[in-house]
Length: 125
Image (cartoon, rainbow, N blue to C red):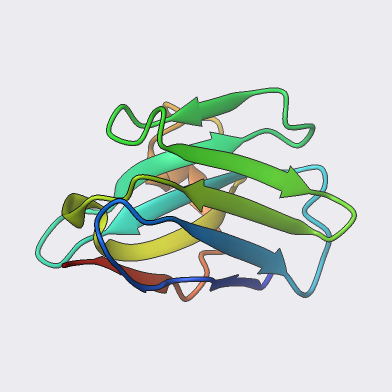
């Protein structure tokens, strides 16, 4: 199992930007597809974005397309989520995870494991 640690969350105003990081501290994630998910209070967890090991295959949820960018630095064993033009509805705890299974659609959290503890993002004026 890989230990994933998210960071970079905070309280921002609508329209602001944040960059989240997901660092793997125990083993390399260079050969693994990684995903970002989020969960708002009283809502189900939802897919945000995923990136293949090489960075060549990227998917986004429609709700963040054009505003969020997922990337990775394999030399640093880290995956990033650049979030621009943040909206109040982006408020959630954001989690990263490893996609170890390919039984479901890329956005299905059941294919992902090794979830981090999450980082809180609050967008409010």
